Image (cartoon, rainbow, N blue to C red; front, top):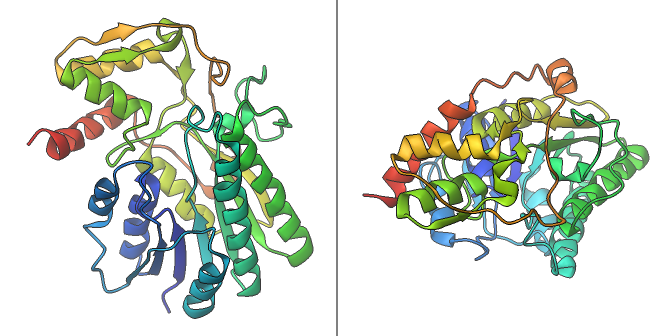
Length: 319
């Protein structure tokens, strides 16, 4: 019997790749996305175009804040596992928009948790974020860190659902795994994400804002590696766990830009202001727990991953 899995944010960067992986595994896949205009709905449609007509795929165009509709989807489709990837994203965009981020990321997530509990979902996996660590002095970032000082509404909303997940585990026995993603990039990237912006602006000859002259480090993790971690978590009931999903090899932003320059064949035009208060100096994943519990093993180097992003960008935007 194939599994029935439900994936929110199905038209996004991670969600669309995860849908394809689970379809290839033979699952029945229920995708939820509201195709909002935070970024181009046309790009989101393109993200799902390869599999939207697949016999085992059902697309539900709903908003996770709509409690009744969420309940209806769970009651009719009866998923055994959930990958909850939908959210208002972007640390900097969340500044000044706390009500919106609370509404989508907290209320919407609670709607999903409640529906999952009522309908006997076996495993609930949740997309959390490395930005939850804030400006912790502990390197690499490890899951035992308290993470109680988020720098903006985005990580604060993710922390709230990590805590709420424990509540559902404690009260209802739900298997809940929060995965803290580290700087995801790859084909189908959102246009507000740094790897896309750097690639796009170098290609177009536009100016790039590079905080602290590129002396910040990020633990860039290719989308296929992230998806491998999420998919493994969907199939692994662990009780309650919080797990870093990164690469574990931070890269200087200025070195990251250099790789893209070499791929595109142009030099970047840079502005280098100080970093805002929302930006930590470094992100750096300790992935020992992911290796142990999920057999997680990231495969794609930053150079190889950026080459794949550039190939996709050329096909999508330069033909």
